[in-house]
Length: 376
Ligand SMILES: CC(C)(COP(=O)(O)OP(=O)(O)OC[C@H]1O[C@@H](n2cnc3c(N)ncnc32)[C@H](O)[C@@H]1OP(=O)(O)O)[C@@H](O)C(=O)NCCC(=O)NCCSC(=O)CC(=O)O
Image (cartoon, rainbow, N blue to C red; front, side):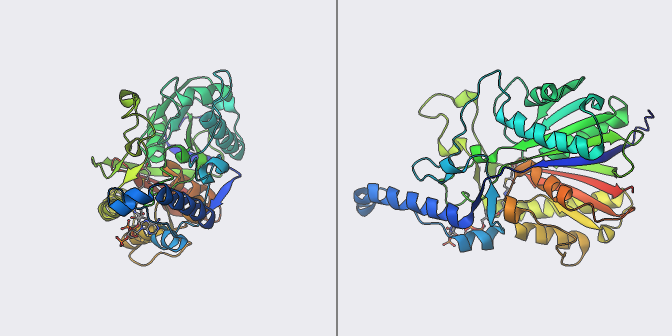
């Protein structure tokens, strides 16, 4: 088999959890929790020592974010007003862990779509925003479950994990260190979402994606050439999660609001939109591409309004759904997997020579862009 040291995307895979929660179901559960909380604290609220909680609304959620529903690994616990978290039973050390299980499902689909055997793969990156344990690496568990030789490791750049993973895989191909690399992004975001926080309880969903990055010399006929990749990070506290082993002890420990997802959504919106559009425009120029000729933008799926603005700045006109497809309406924000889901679901209709960009952005701040051209 030939090695060209030119990276391509050979195929992608997607695992979608069967259970899904509509905005109406989510808001009914949240508002039942609010009613119960306010009744339980009625005296303190009347005395002004405790603030009453405000109800959520389906109209607000859809208008502010574009999200209509989200998939989750475990629905009953999330919707029980007395629980409001996914109840995923702990598994024994000799059982496949949840993240590995959904990552393997997505990886198997990517391999099948490429006509590739797992034994052909040289490396596995588990690129995701929340690892369910510190070690051993989730990636090594996925590697073992697929019976892959070589090496594997985890990486976390929050929402940009998958695009940073694709660039890392592409660099292995460019350097000749590997010819076939799986970038797997299992996102169990329901675990870190604070389902009791009105400002963010609607934001996330669970999913797993896989991207098979390979040397063009071994790639299937139908693939996407990686024309260039560009990464950027700028520190910000506006999306933050303080969970970690240094704060394991009560009363500061796990379960407190700051150990879950916290964001200043408006600031994120305002500060990240210009970062993303500038990065896409700069990298287009460096690659000698006309941004207005990009056939499709597969953008991170956090907020429909954000994507509208970014796409307009890049393309120079209001983007159609065909130019900038949305998946957050049914998946919500799936962190690093979002732009890959958009690419997975919306790339087969394009023609040879069509060019586009897979672009993620989020906590860090972080932005990752992968420019691709359909080969055949
Ligand atoms: C979160 C948002 C949808 C919120 O929309 P807005 O900014 O318009 O809303 P806001 O917070 O200013 O609130 C406006 C008004 O609505 C009220 N309000 C807030 N929540 C409500 C709810 N659930 N139901 C009804 N009303 C609500 C507020 O109290 C306020 O009232 P009043 O007007 O009376 O004060 C949006 O800001 C957003 O999507 N920002 C981008 C976020 C983003 O990209 N994050 C990255 C996520 S991290 C990520 O992607 C993954 C990663 O990096 O790992």
